[in-house]
Image 1 (cartoon, one colour):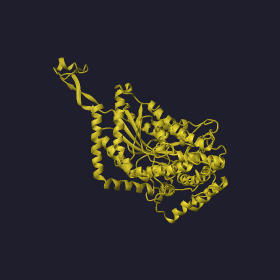
Image 2 (tube, one colour):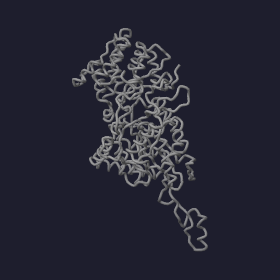
Image 3 (cartoon, helix red, strand yellow):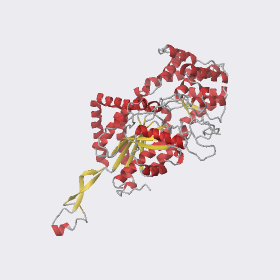
Image 4 (tube, one colour):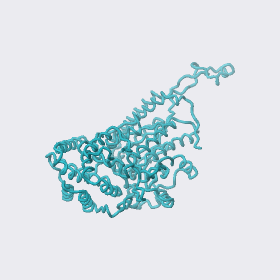
Length: 593
């Protein structure tokens, strides 16, 4: 029986896999999707054939070990080319239609390739992409790409023959990873991090390079048939001890400086945020600048260098960015003029203000009436939350520049705006405030850099807290909150989901990560904050996006579309605020008790 909930294209992929595996109860550990998020018929058939022909438990154990490596996604993609070769060689003898399906898949690969945007190309692992292009060029009879000698050897090594048994397939995959990546799969226990990395610059690269529009994606079923972590204590990702957690916090503080929130308040924050599935995680609020004692150390050199790259990008594109600011500001002004309420002003005509009525007989002052003035009330605050996980490594300059355009445009419209990024490092979700609500200007936004995991549920909760905190600092008057997050709808963290259920904690990835983030968004919305998403990621995650954010999202195919997307989200939020009874003009006091 299936214990995981599937929907839409995931169910279609599941049915294709079941049909090929001839097992209508198995839960696959991989599924295949095209760029548009639709189930890939041929590759899901291959997944099913692999489940049919080879011992699943042995393959399970092998890929469980592969999951421990930093480059697990790249390894997955390449190894599945090998498995495709073997499964096709064996399956084509008994399935006459398989050859046609393979040919069709090859044609679809090139169709998708030509439709890819520049940003999508940048997000690819070029080694994996070139190997796919070489494979499907061979299948379809197209011109083959030019490969280096090493890439040619990789191509040939992935032509697994169809007469291999389970041990033969696993041996072929093991030899492949050792020869080309020096990765000894059986030299590490499941749960060990393969090649350990140290230092901030390298540590920030830990995590899934997952936003690559990958063909094959893990379903999250690798934990066990019910998605739980192994019970034998050998966990791919574990909860650190209190001593380890303190060392990790000390490291984070060394890099990001002291927390921008005092410790007494942090205790309240932990009580509020470290609940439900985030009980075993940790939260840290950092400022925009890194505060390492040694600014030239290798640990933070990459992050500081990225800040320099961002600023050079801004200088190089200054004219375009200035034009974008003017255009977006104009769009915002049009939006706010339509929905912002005019502030009343004293007048000699209009509605009588009883508080001023004494002036008429006593002072002979006729300015005792109120009428709508020219100035409009903009009782809204905006938080732009940026995914800063490893998946954004190749687009950091664009994200920084677009965020700066958005922030500057809102500020010029006198809208309180904050910009923050979030990432998870060593199980600690770091919310880095690049621009606070009280800050004037955008000087800190170019310090944005990417690297690490992304625990979306905790990142969103921390951002919502900062919005409430701003209201309290502003006198306790509740504003309309709009929290916009740039996301790929693929939550993933090294610390598992806290669970009291029998079987222990669950990995924070796949279905589990989506459920946790969906619950977090629901709680934030129930507290009165509008949460919207700007989606830029793999088509395979479209269903995740809809499940987490409902209809409150826009999808962009290029990061240059972010500012336009934000304008649409702001207008939509204001329209909903205008129609909602909960924003009836009565300000509410706030309390964090």
